[in-house]
Length: 303
Image (cartoon, rainbow, N blue to C red; front, side, top):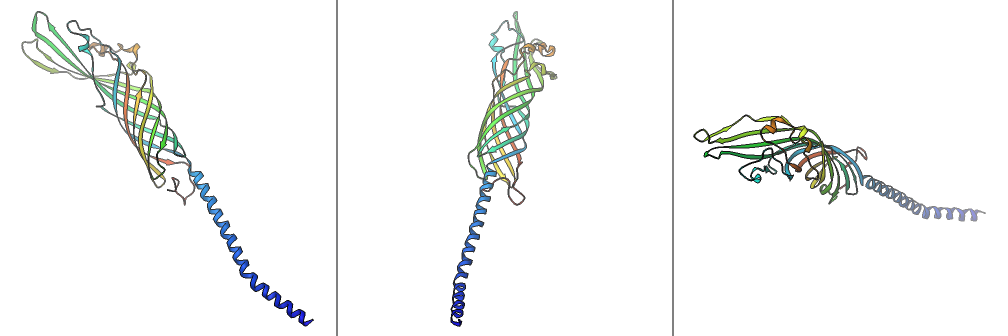
């Protein structure tokens, strides 16, 4: 009996001695594997979260305008020189305007759909030249120059698709879409100068500018396409941006029914041409993400 008890005690001691280290190692491996799986799952969830994001912010900048004439009109009919000599001369992309934009963008895997309502002020200039002479005395003549500045205010609503070329902190992008521009207000400023040869000499003169409201002369809305390039820079939980876009007008910005409706402008021989309007738009901005992982994690990306 004592021998059996001794054998049992020895067997239990050996079993405990050999099984305890192996059991601890197996438990440690299991714990590490569970921890690794948890971190990997969390990383996958973070990556899924960062694949899509809502952004909201403001941007502003300047613009340059080009008026593209589709049909010419004139308030006078020259009798002694071709009508082509009375056509307006336009100054393309020389007058600065401004704009401010509210940007709302949904981002998904480097593609974005962006709605950007914009208050836009644009300016463009054209000039007229007219000459009168006495057929019986060539020395008696009058030359008149009209420089006319058009100022328009529109609510421009673009819908753009944007593609981020890279997924790094500095992200160049390309974008394209369409827009509608709703007229808010418009005005014209006409500066008159000239040379009078009819008074026995050469006399140059200039008058006070004529400033009138001209909202009725413009169409209530026009439409077009736009595209551009730019770049985002991620700084913490915000995104700074610079973009340059080209707005290409497709429809007439002038109201044909009201072309001769302003008496003061008709009195100086003005009649607006039918035209479309293009803009070069340069903007800088700052947008913020609307979805956050948490205080301890950057909401922008993990690059």
